[in-house]
Length: 382
Image (cartoon, rainbow, N blue to C red):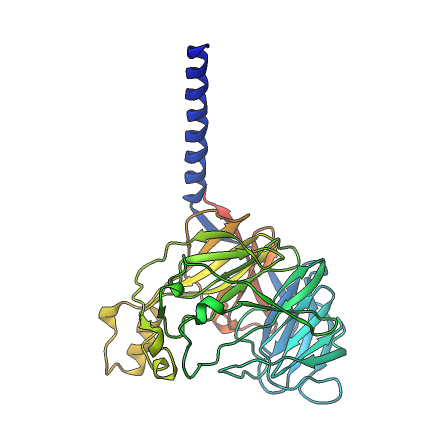
C-alpha cells in the first residue's frame, strides 16, 4: 500500500475542507450595504399604499389611504393601467383587507371571512368563504405582505392569519399548529401544513406575548416557503409537500429582552404584557430564493420606565434599530445590514433590488407634486 500517496490525499482533502470552510465563513461575514439605484415615479397627488409587485408583468398593486378603497395597477414606468373603487358596488369586496396580492396573473384579496379573485383590470372574477380568526380588522390596509407558492405547479395564496388571542392556549398548541393555509384561487380549497421542530424556542413550553405570529416569504419563483416567528432565531424553510427541509440560524441583535410566560398563562391575560423590550423579526421581502429578513431591536431597558411623557416615549421607541439579514439559496449571505432610513424595504423587485416604502414627507425633504419611491440594491461593500 502506498502510504505516502494516501497521506498526500488526506492532507489535500483536509486542505479542501479547510478552504471550503473559510470561504463559507468569509461569505457569511461579508459586509453589505443598500445603494440607491433607481426610483418608482408616478403622477398621483394622493398618497398610495403599495401592496404587491408582479415580477413577470412588472406591475404594482396600490390603494389609496382612507375609506374610499380606490385601487390601482401601475407599471414600472408609473403609468396607471387600471383603477377601480372596490369598497362598494357589484364589483367590490368591502372595506376590510387583510392581505392582497398577485397569484400568477390574478389578484387575491383576503377580506373578512371571504376571499375574492380579480383579474389584472381589477374586475371581480369569483369569491368563496374563508374562515379566520383575527384580532385586528384594517380598512384597506394589510397588516403584512401577501405571499404565494406553487403546489403541483398550481399557484396558491398564503391566506392564514390566526392572530386572535385564544382564551387559553392548549399545552400542545405549537406542536399541532399548521403554519401554512394555502388557498387554491380556482376553487378556494385549502391545503394546511408546515410544522416547526424542537429547535424553536416556541417548542420549550413557553409563550412570548405578541411575538408568535409568523412572518412569511415566498413567491412564484421560490422553491421553498420560509417563515420565522418574531421572538425566535430560526428561519424555517419548507418544500411543496410542506415538509421542513432547511433551517437557518439568525443571531439576534441587542438590545433584546424577551418576556417569556408559561403556556398556561398565555391567554388574554398576557395581552397587556410589555412587548417593547424584546426584539422581533418583522418582515421579509425578495424574489425567488433571494430575500431579506427585517429585524427590529427592542428598546434599552434602562430607557423604559413608567411616567414617560408622549415625547419621551416617542424618542424611546425611535431608539429601536432596524437590520436586514440577506438570505440566498438557503444560507445567510452576509452580516445583518443596518437600516437608518424611515419606513421599510417593502417589496423585492429581483436582482437584489428592493422598493423603499414610507410616507412621502418622510422620504423627501421637499414636497413633490408626484409620488416617488426609491429603489435600493443590496451590494457587497468593496
